[in-house]
Length: 296
Image (tube, rainbow, N blue to C red):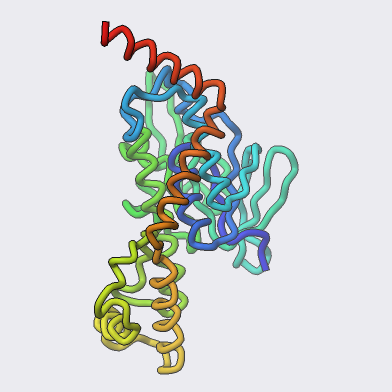
């Protein structure tokens, strides 16, 4: 038994996005964030989708971390100093600056800093040297992980640093989500899912999506059997168990229209709560002033 299913190192856009996907899947997830990400050096964020006039960095972090906790992650303001393997070589052991010592089945590295905390896992293999201004420097090799974040070390994934995938906030967030989805796909493969049913889609469906044939479990069974590998390496009983579990999960994504409206109201409420009522009221006052001036 481990303390967590997933430990994520870094609470910036990539790590936070990975945390949301992992926790929403139901994995016991913790995000360690020391609060000193590269994004903090940005003066103002103007190219992140969903903020028509941009957003200041502090507010963006408040919104990100509120989402992380809403999804079910534990958010810990601490710096990871080293990651090793346990004595039996299965679990990861994560040690932090403030003396925390936790174990995890899987780790997603999503911190922009040098990656030295990963060195105990593979020594110099993760690092590369280069010369700059006559001096030799060493840093984490962004090519150590593949494009999906998978590494030669079973259970270790890297969302950052990831070269050009880390240099813009919105791309880093998308890459973090992609790496988390690859982790989930690997987990599902281990459980026996295969082919087209192994990837996990975090997607809520309207009532209309379950009309007609798709409201019938037999239709889903036909679809499932078409999507899996031709010769799944599991017995018939396990195959049927996974199939019914998949169908149960599909029906759990069904959201009636009245529930959509309720979620929408709650979504706005959480935004206002995170922004702060006073700031929202100030913005409304500004909007009314602009409307008055435009009318004049």
